[in-house]
Image (cartoon, rainbow, N blue to C red; front, side, top):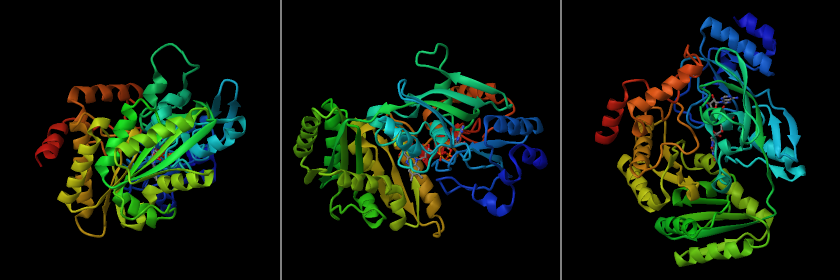
Length: 468
Ligand SMILES: Cc1cc2nc3c(=O)[nH]c(=O)nc-3n(C[C@H](O)[C@H](O)[C@H](O)COP(=O)(O)OP(=O)(O)OC[C@H]3O[C@@H](n4cnc5c(N)ncnc54)[C@H](O)[C@@H]3O)c2cc1C
């Protein structure tokens, strides 16, 4: 088998030595890591299809991997799968400025795409904080979001067509120009976490770069006041391009991280608020936002005076996860969604969960669309702390579901939240999901350990979460 794969992709692009395999054992979540059986780095759709056909015929499990920045374990070879890394497939094949679209390979790094089309006055809207590293194929895998997805929508709103290699090696094209009739298979694929097929080419929408922007930074003495401000901005009918929040623990982290912004050490919360679009009217819109901040007792609010100042605030925000390394040896990122009206209550409950488990929790998140990211800080060297962090994370997700939200906004389910699917779905609904997967992957070879819990587990999982 190894010889056959080598003959398809070339000697250098089939890895099986233990040191190389170790690099593919984890993704952005590091609690559960397993080295793969082998790693294959194909360069074309044809190579992916040929390798997949060999694996399928031999009954060998496998999974696709982009940059491995996923935060729910989607690219982790839990059962020693063969990893197909799409990292070499990083060409931008075609840019069409008139129809505002680009045809790209899946290994193109998200930010590179926007940089490459900037000279045409265009950009790719989904902007995960990991955009300097993550790939557009991985963005489709997770239906990734980002700070500016509040106004512009997440990945699924920006993908028009996909070329995919099905689990048996057949190559098919899905989707097409806007209005393509038939069931929305591109929508089904986007967010399927590499469980239905491997994306080898994407046609994505590009948006015109906004004419202008205004960015404000607001400091609050209480988390409640900041939460109320978020709710009031949205209730006023304003649609900011981005509305991000950090609490005191997160601020401590970013100020000790690589991109400090000089935030005061004693504020309880900050909001980073951006509006964009046609120049005329931006100042008035920002004035309305500032007025809402003042009504809620903001300590201070400042509009960025230069692009350098705006960049500093955004770099500070976008490196927030990494900055947690400055205040904690380990952290677990959670990703839940809640109705905005419940924000103050949910943040209070998350604080109480931290106290219950004796762990600090930093909150840094896309507040405008109610997409929370509690970062549960722990020390993996202390026996039992990792388990406590996991339990605290699960409890936070349970709270999100209880208030009418979801167990994931953008990071996906993967391994990490597989059991938490039981919080949201009944066994017949999960059975329907298994049936969809089996229609594409009857042998259950493609990333099979992810996304959908093992049948029959839900009773036990729910009992443990609600009674335990
Ligand atoms: C510091 C940091 C900040 C982050 N911020 C955000 C954020 O703001 N918003 C957000 O949404 N996410 C965020 N993430 C999570 C992560 O970056 C995204 O989920 C991203 O989309 C993953 O892309 P990737 O290329 O790393 O994919 P991987 O991690 O390699 O894979 C992710 C999933 O997609 C599947 N997959 C990968 N490539 C393909 C393909 N070609 N065909 C089919 N399936 C495929 C994999 O099997 C896996 O299930 C962050 C991560 C980090 C580390």
